[in-house]
Image 1 (spheres, rainbow, N blue to C red):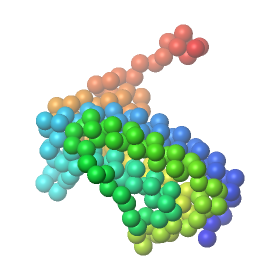
Image 2 (image 1 turned 135 degrees about the vertical axis):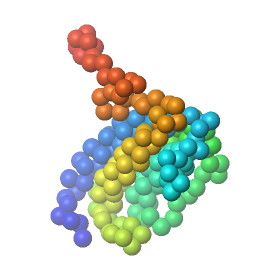
Image 3 (image 1 turned 30 degrees about the vertical axis):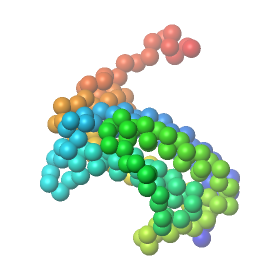
Length: 178
């Protein structure tokens, strides 16, 4: 079932979503980098993930979603041989692998993007629609991780127009003219 999607739509949707995903990845990297290694065992509640676990979940699941879409299958995921340990290592791993995953999805044909893919027997959607699910999942966990930063003594990076720690500074007339 194609959900009424056309080949033209899925190619345009994919281009839009991958462009947005790469922009969001820059913000995600700033948030992960803000996790202080010395306090990465912080968790706001005994039932919550630690900051280190959450940072890895955020980075790894973004890449796993892209690989699942590119593979047209969410059943098996390759784990890295060496799991990154520090915030800088997670950020570097994420940067390299998010770009690899985006490139793989960018190579799919419209027919492949329209392929129904089962997601752990929860639902089945055309592969391209998982890009929206990936985006929502990523933003959700990034927001969760941001709430950990100040209690760990870190600063909240600019996400969508500034934060207390990194206020929004509108571009100058010269910058907007360039």
